[in-house]
Image (cartoon, rainbow, N blue to C red; front, side):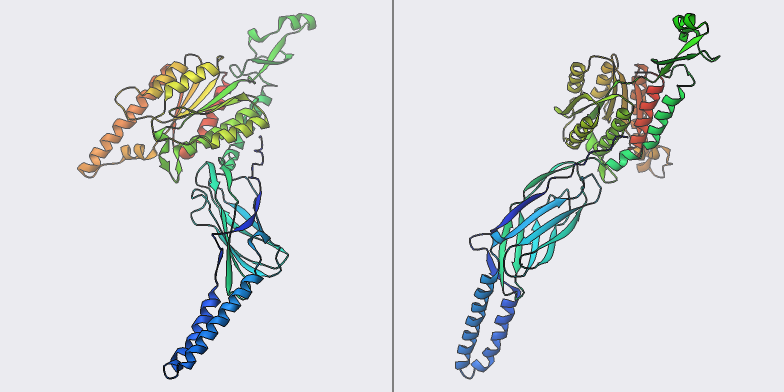
Length: 459
């Protein structure tokens, strides 16, 4: 199985700059010391000279603040660096490390806050570190991406004090960065069993010919009783004076197109993920299996326009390009333009190929545009039309209604299910393969159908 490349974001660093015009503030102990000076208020009611003592105390505190402020390193003497240790994947916990360097001559207590995107972490990342003079320290915080695609970090804000905690400086470091959240690699690894199965199929055909399982020539061997007469190589038989048969293997170097519908129907969320997220995960699993099997893989993501397009290819570069393309396919709020996707694919792919179309069906009285487009595409290609189902609908059909409200809900669910079954049956009559599967089982079902198509030489 092809291992995904390391795609961790690049480290980024910057020096601090003063925040605002002055970039200074009063520490917590400054106000505590001012409160201590209020003890002069009581005696001051009887003798106004004590009020002068309170003023002198306040002046002393202010002088201490100035001294403490001068001791603090300037913002330019604080360096900060953000480091990522792993590729950021959807719903996969990861850690970011903030590394700090104090080039000043005073130990400081530093607090850093990052402008992180909401899709990466619900709360604002905040870390506290004790940073000795002339040394470096680091702090980690965790993230768990909830969306795919590019996300943008803003500035990092710093607040630091000395051990006196009387004065405080405010600074900002420009750690603006765009990071990319990729589909979850771990999900695709679950289909390793199917990779093993495909390898076993290829090895078994070295010893036993099974009709219908591949027609690509592999080698010559002695005739066996189970061989068909059409597989006998008569020229080799004449040279060796005994029957020689041709051995075949599953066809390789075929083209598999992953077509992803990114329209509004795929925005529906199931267990915290959108249907499009499940489709992207299934596409990644199938791409791994197809590349391992020797096929070329291409990808087309579309909404109202073509969002991502990747020509057929294989190898580690293709995996990297697929990951980038799948990461950037985002669901849109409008209905997808299925005809445009069909026309684009007709231009890009002339020869017969396997088209795995991951989509959903709109509940309309007429034939949906996506079904008509799939029928047109099935005239040239083998189409695996995959509908991401809604298991709650079929569960509702099997329930026994207890009141009129539940009866009407069950009737509506029955009509929807029957309509979907009719559309998929119509597609099968046109030569397409169809699947309707719940999101959690999508990857497994799509990979299994691909291997079945390879075994039966349907492409």
